Image 1 (tube, rainbow, N blue to C red):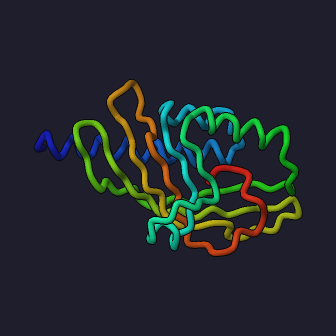
Image 2 (cartoon, rainbow, N blue to C red):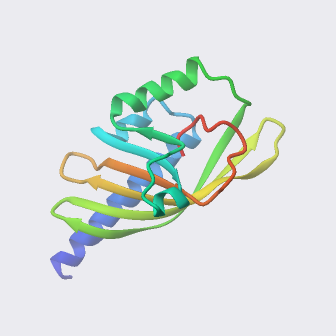
Amino acid sequence: MDLAIFERLRLQHLATELNAIHAEWIDDDRLEEWPELFTDDCIYKVIARENHERNLSLSAIFCDSKGMLVDRIISLRKANIFPVHSYRHILGPTRIVSEHELKITAQTNYTVFMTRADGRTEIYNSGKYIDEIDCSGEKPLFTSKVAVFDTNVIDTMMVRPI
């Protein structure tokens, strides 16, 4: 097999695995671990598709460092009051959009289902992740993770990462 093809498949596998861990940790309420998937100077943004397409900066969630991700989780645990619910992510295949050395841009479609305490499940959010991933270290890390959501109405206060 051509080494370039092998390396591209390896990078795609790393991106797919990183997204799977991201979803798993959110779904399993392992939120204190979640920031460890990001570089220190990362970007994490959850933004409506309309705003993203128009290059508008207004986002439902915006964090520009791992420290802000940690603060978000601390706030979620200690300050926010919200109805009990759980998430379940369904991810589409991850596609490498571009690569340069060991830094890649990838895109993955997602749907997040929310189940409330009464057992009712509904689609909470859907869209695509646009990820920039640094694969140069011991493990791949998000340098940027943007969740571009198609859902126009967010049912409840968005307290957890998407």
